[in-house]
Length: 370
Image (tube, rainbow, N blue to C red; front, top):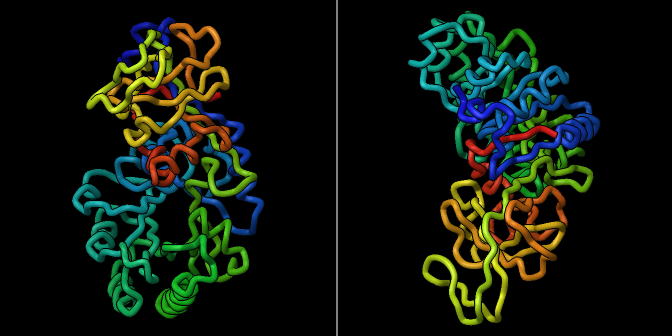
């Protein structure tokens, strides 16, 4: 039994993540209209912090060719949630785990043991061959692709339906390495055509940046794009961030000039001030690098984070808030890009990218779909 179910409708969480279904669907539609490429939503890493099942239910039955996840665990969670959209597992799968039961998933493959295991224990499974076009993370090296395919063809009970790769710098279309990856992907498609009698159903190298920045190369980069960050509202002015993290003002107190706050006493009050205590911290996703630099908002007023962000507590300056009160709603991360506490602005303060802040949002925080 879930904890919240013990309280039925009378439980009010201190922290919550609000997910705008309208914004998510608007982003999906905008991205789908950019080109003839199909859009495959990326739901890995708890849907970039938005909630794996939450996002899947919003996008299910919207016509996506498949959802992209990283692990067998994520795929199985979607299966248990009765999601009907097909699922492609992009990350490494331990072949041993495929021996347990029949599973309705597709797999990215660059390891021959995985292909052999799928052939034996998951007959009929679809696979997407991952070729390393130059980013040099996972994938089969281009000059080893022919040999891999010759061996893979021995396993007739799996279906090679796709070719996949990944850009290292898709936001820079004129970069020599980006162009090299496009050329190598073209070479890989030709090699695949030499070794497979059935035309590939899917060819895809683009993620969000590839779709947004490489429109002039649209025919060369495949018929599908795997979209993560853009789907959640980042990377283009027409896209709308989908998520807000909210908490509750738990305590208000007066601090006198010269008094110090938090671990290591890194903040000293420059004047008499009113401070607020929030029941949320770096466990919940408030990045510790926002200590003494970040902001939250109360009724539209930007309130600076003061002192160290603790594991479950953050202190803020509420001196400029009119009549603050315990129980008042506080926006920790705003979905308005221009706000000082938006994910994009907060990421800049942390010298990182919005992805990192998003995926560190606690999975235990309640997700509420608006």
